[in-house]
Length: 439
Image 1 (cartoon, one colour):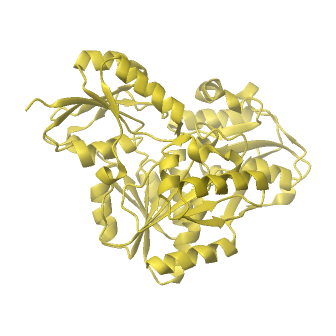
Image 2: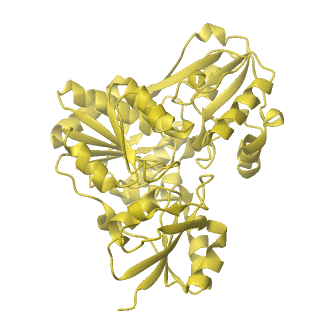
Image 3: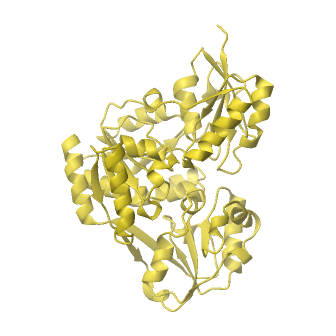
């Protein structure tokens, strides 16, 4: 049998999972390359033979996505598989057109082909866009499960930015584990808030091994999705968070629309700060494409430590990196907190940005004029550049809307006021009824 030659387009997440589950031991295919985008410093690496399996003794090289046309021709590729998330539908079809024009077919794997079945119940929390409010939803659900005397383990969507072999299965139960696995700011943003709630978190690269490990210590597995990706595990309850600040995106982004159509429950978040007309857009779209889904309208309640320290001050606004970069948001929790707690002025960080932080503004031009400094930290160098940028900015305080304790990561010459956000109790009670039903 002549094997079909395949390139998997990814961003160090869904692409590795699709390979592990569908391609790794599949004699009908030969994966000749991965391509990478969105995340810096992924291309140029090799998906290692220890993870790629015996069919790939030399591993599989990861190339920049920009080289896709040349790679198709070089390897005489039959199929290009699209395996990453939080992109507009037009963007996906642009990539399809590149593949088709260069002689390859273009496809995506269906959820049923790559969702792993679990021996224990799985509750999946996903979204239509990154930054919709998954973290506050997963926190609420983990609290509800503990109140039901269930042992909950969170499994987080992958963020393998370091040594892939060492990161195959990661288990986080203490803050020391974050240092042990050399976590980036982006990883800490997703793990810290669970550790604060005394919840064990798994993440990594090989999600079948991760699932089997989590099953041994969990009554319920809580899938904490990344970006707007589809769950890696087959859920018993599929909860999808929608964002009225980006109303309509639930039908315009991949694979957020897939989640929207698959959802058992759609949580429309941030209703306390959104326009009713935008909330109605989401409701009407849901009636059109997934009328069986239940709707929960949730408030996102914002608090800030030492709010008096912000009143009347000039502030730097630091927001969660992915939410405001490829998530496309022009405001976040820190921006809303600045308004709520009487900040005098917001200092534009763009003129002060150094190194890779300055490059972020060139790539994500919607941030220019927003007053937002994204909390980028995919490497020690980038963390240092974030620190240098903050120290250069002439302001009184830093208002941090990132989920982590930023003061433990960067050492700056201004006080950092941490913003937190949580789901309201009424919405939590509605979620509790649905969770009780499936358990």
